[in-house]
Structures are given as structure tokens and as C-alpha cells.
Image (tube, rainbow, N blue to C red):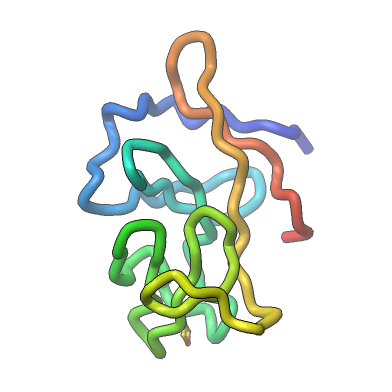
Length: 114
Ligand code: FES
């Protein structure tokens, strides 16, 4: 399996108001724009597989629409809505994001097992 995946998308093609779901070699992820930077996080919630990408985003925090668990889009850790870290093993997968020479968004392989 490759250790990177070129999405073919440029950052300016993303809508900062909503996530951009996509399939990757490591499963379903969504791209988010946080403070002008692109982040890639699991599309589904580790609680009961709720559609996290359909949740409410506030800054770097995404809240699952099913039972309102929140996660940092930057670290993947479970947090509260203000971003304070919970003492919880639950987390989402986040991928390293870079840009190709052509300016497209490139995702790196997950740092944690998928
Ligand atoms: S499925 Fe996401 S909080 Fe329950």
C-alpha cells in the first residue's frame, strides 16, 4: 500500500464551510479547512460509526451528530466542544497533509493503525 495519496484537489477548491468527504487507500476520510489550513480526519465516529463528517464543526473541533462526542481535527483526540482534551482512549484517525509540486493536496499514511 502506498504511503501517500494525491487527492487531485487544490486547497482553494475546498469550501471552508463544509467538509469534503473522499475515499482514500486507508478508508473514508474528510478534508476540513481550519484557520486556512487543510486537515484530513476519519469520516466516521469511533463510538458507533456515526457520520462524523456530517457533524458540526467549530474551529478545529468536530461534533458527531449522533451522540455529540467531539474530536480535534488536528490531533484526533476526544475533546469537549471547547477543545479541552478528555481522558479517553477514543480518537479519530487524522492524516498528515502536504501539497504536491502542482499544488494539489497530498495525504500521508495514517500514523495509527486503521
Ligand atoms: S456515533 Fe458518534 S457519538 Fe455516538
